[in-house]
Image 1 (cartoon, rainbow, N blue to C red):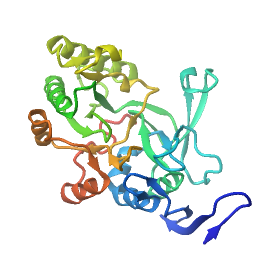
Image 2 (cartoon, rainbow, N blue to C red):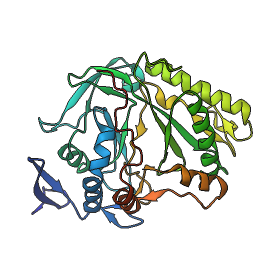
Image 3 (spheres, one colour):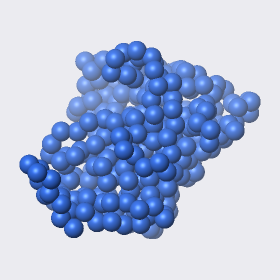
Length: 323
């Protein structure tokens, strides 16, 4: 069906049923990635096919979206609150917020959507939500926030450093976390760097790490500062860009309660449809030795990998979750 409101461009509509929910999908032919000609229909197809491994990592997490209404060749915007006119079945959680998260700078509340089904995922992606960003904490069914159940470290290279240097630092972080009994999994970010995820043990398990967001953040910061002292020519722990040239910024701040990180398996709003993709440590070891040995992955490559290997992240979305 083609619909045209007075003074507006025509749009095509397709009515579908997803998980028993009626949805109207619009503009399947719209080009979302001009460089590759990738359409909205292809984006929706990717998210539908990746959903079995994506949804567990979104489970019970408030989702911030970055939307590109006219594709990645045009402007984008962040959206934290559930969209106006969202269907009543879309799960929404109300989270108290500090002034840093609101336009007015005052404390208040945000009404985040929770993506707990293919229908919810399809609804939000249909609104041109290419990127899905989540916190490291989760919420209960009643909407109460839990402590974080995973730690994330974002490895961000400063030019001329690249993925090879990120892979070298990733191996250092892996070794250091292992000393504290934490196993981490690498994820190429789909942008420039690498993310490392480690599931956190249950509270009171005797591990040398607290469980509030601030405690997890401070622990990650200690790791960053320790590695910076040991490898000053490769690692930097401060955000100051003037200190990051040729080094890898070990961003510990992603564990702050108010911050989000791109979800594993989410698309990125780049020139091409790249994905935040879980990798093997064998791949990271190769990438640490060869500047061409590790590259970011496109959505078709990620689908092929999932078909072959399943979910390499393996955290199940909620390791050691508090009830």
